[in-house]
Every structure is written in C-alpha cells, then in structure tokens.
Length: 568
Ligand code: DON
Image (cartoon, rainbow, N blue to C red; front, side, top):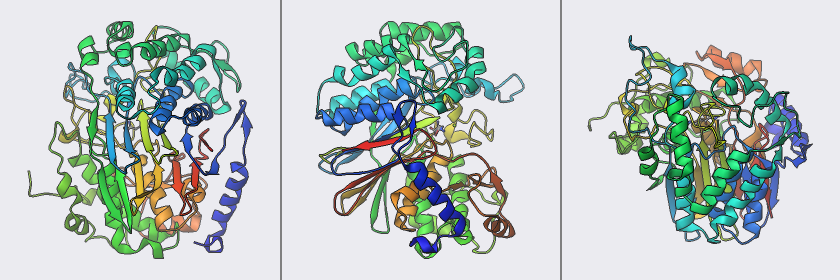
C-alpha cells in the first residue's frame, strides 16, 4: 500500500511513530525499535535481555543459546513477565528447515481439582485462581531451557549462558521509567500477597535509574547454573518452594516438581497465499485459532480492501467471533481432552462457519455457537535469528502482570497465576474475559489452555517472519493482524507492528479498539453495521523479525513498551 492511500489520522500516527522510533535515551538504555542487519537479530521486551542475547550470538552461540540467555535475563530484568516461575512455548526452525515446538507450559499440581476455586455454594472465587500461592501451576521454564540446551545448543556451555543473568541479579541493573511506575503501582499487591518484603518493594517510591538488586534470585540462578534442572526441581530451591507453598496455602509438592516434564510437539501448519505459517498446537489455542482465522478470511480477498477500512475490520471481527466461540468449547490440553483438531481445521468446516457472514451487518455473539462435529497484562515474547538461519520464536508467561504477585520467600522469584487459564467454572470469565468448559476444566497434571502464539512464517521453505506477543486473549488476533498486515496490506514491518490494533473474542460481544487510534467516522460506520465498540488500553507488544528477499534482516520491537531490537 502506498502511503498516499492512508487516511490522514493514520499518517499523523505513523509520523509520530517515526519520531518515537528514533533511538530514545532513558535509564541508560537505548530502546532501539527498528533495525536492519545482515547477520542475526534479537527482539525482546527489555534492552538488557536483548543485549545479553546479542552477546551470546556474537560469541558464537546459536539462536537457542541466545534464547536461553534471554529467558534467564528476562527473569531478572523484566519481572513483570520474564520468569523462572512460569512457563511457555517455543516454535523452532533449525538450519535444515525442520520445525518443532517445545511445550514448557505449567501443569496443574497433583492435588488440583475441578472445584478448587469454588466456594460452598459453587460460586467461583477468582481471587484465588489469580493471586497468591494457590494460583500457581508447576513451573516449566527452567526445564524448558535445559531441554532446549541439551538438544540444540551450539556453545554447549550452560554456565556461560546463565552467568550474565546471575551478574545482573547479584549486582543489580537500572530500572526503566516504565518499570519504576509499574513497581510503584503494584506495591500494595506485593505487600498483601507476600509473607516477607520482596526485592521489588522498597520504602520510598521507585524512580527511573534506581538499581534493582535481587540477591535471592541470584542464588537460585546459581543453583540452576551449577545443577541445571535439578538446581530448581530437586535442590534447596525445591525445598524453599514447598516451604513457601505450605506456609501460604499453595499445593505444589516435591513430587509435583520432580514430575515436571516438557513435551516436544509438532507445529500446527497451514498455507496462506503462498506462505507457510507454523505455530503452537494445544495446550495452546494459538496455532489452531490462527489457522482458522487465516483460512476463514482467505476467500474474501482482504488484499483488495483498504487497511483498517470498516469492510476489513468487519470481516476480521466476524471470523474472530466464530473462532473464539470454538476456542471456548473445543480447546484444552489434548493430552487430557480429545481436541477435534482435524475438524476444527477442515477447510469445508471453516467455509461453513462463514456461511452466515453478512458483509453489511454484524452478527450477535449470543446467536453464534461453537461448531458441531460428528466426531466424538503479563507475558513476554522474543524472536531470534542467527547467522546459520536457526529461528526461535518463544512466548513465556507467568500469566497476569507479576503473576500471582507472590514471591517464593528466600528464592526471590515470582510464582505464576496460570491456574486461572483453566476454566475454573463453566462460563466463568477468566482474567482475560475468556470462558471455557469441559475441555479446559482443571485436572491433576493437566496443562491449562493458552492463547500464546509463537509463530514462524516461511515462503518457499525460506524463513520470512518470526513473531509473537503477550496480551492474553488478544495474542491470537495481534499475531493474525501482524501477519495479514504484511501479506495482505503490504505494510512495512514497522507499520505492521506499530500501527493500531483491534480485537474481538466472541464474548464480550464488542470490538475492542486501542485508544486514540480509529477515527470517529470509522467507529460510526461499524456501529451502523451493528457492532459494539469498546475503547480500551493498548493491545499486545509484538516482537517481529522479517527476512527480505536480499537476505537482510529487519527486526522491530513494539513501541508499546521498553522492547528493544538489536542485531549485527
Ligand atoms: O497463556 C496464556 O494465554 C496467558 N497466560 C497469557 C497471558 C498474557 O499474555 C498476559 N500478557 N499481557
């Protein structure tokens, strides 16, 4: 799309972004938003983590080595979502073109049960699935990093990958302005949900450039450096976790920690207009939902519709409404529930789902149901590419901002509140307003349904794009929009990532728009079609890499946060 075809308000927005995207100075960091390089790139949520990943690449590590360094660095310098107390998913493409996925999602402890967050009248108590120790699933991140290392590391020097993170935990790092604001906002929660004073709480308010030192966390990372997975799952750290659980109403036991396993899985893959899209299978809904969205809009020639026109937003919304209805009913951990993957992805089924799509009028979510078959604000994403062409797309989470808000006393890390991603009661909305039922009910050892959508896009076998984002329920639609922004609307990577986003998730029945981003005229047109509009906060923080025809690598870090793209 040429710039002259963009409406005026978008032009103003883009010009604003261009200025914003010049390197910014703050907290001794440069938030580099866009780069173009020849060899390798890292895009993550914090400049320190991106820098650590880049150093590993320059020292001869591959994308997996860099990813491990970035994951542990984020656990130190991006506590809102970076973690060792959470879990995640990786989509990985190796130098030979093989693509596989690693599931290091948290699991429900053996003592978990379907009614564990219900009171005696059967009412859901969301506070318990969202805050405090009982909200935590058994963490998977440390085992995930170890298993990635054993299978794919090039450096083969585990200790070297951990050391930079130990150093910044031990000696401290300077927090950004945004971090100071968030730490101050969370102070009351940190006091309420902890039996001790965690490192993120201090007497006076946090300010930009304050040094955050996390000595307990440094000790845990040292145990992981010296004993790999055992350093976390069966050492003094495990004792500390279990002690903290017992003292605070949590149920994770030594056995739960010992039993934790990662699972290598096959990606969900589809073709879209000459591109191959590979993303995460269950227990994430990301790959299935993304595939459904792409296939449902494909027959309607999005590429002929103007970017962010009412016509395009209406089509996308109607596809999203139907896909999220399916998600609520049919998706859960496929190791526990028979997810009808083939039916959900069947082209005839997807065509049928859009039969009642009316190009003029919105449908109502109350009259849209999941398809029938005859057969039985925190997460973080990073994208990395190395000189050998290895591509890593990882989304990792402790679920809400600062997870359960509870730290493990003496170990300095936050526990996730991932149990809230289960359906704690049929029809009860979770933190992200998502509902579910049988497929995603709590069972011991089961993994809670996720929306995380780490994705790799190829064209004729060559890697074209590596992307993903946080954002709870909005993850799927943000990844989807970023892909169609490139493929259908022919935007630059910068615009594809930075320009405003919208979102519909079936229920609540509303199109969520980012603030100050969509004109009144557009909103009125959508309302006249029968859509309900809700202006809410920012949507997603996409970290994307795009490989040009000439082999150069573009990397873009979302302007919505401190995210930083680096490379060489
Ligand atoms: O796995 C999931 O879908 C959620 N736990 C992700 C949470 C998230 O993205 C929060 N970020 N803003």
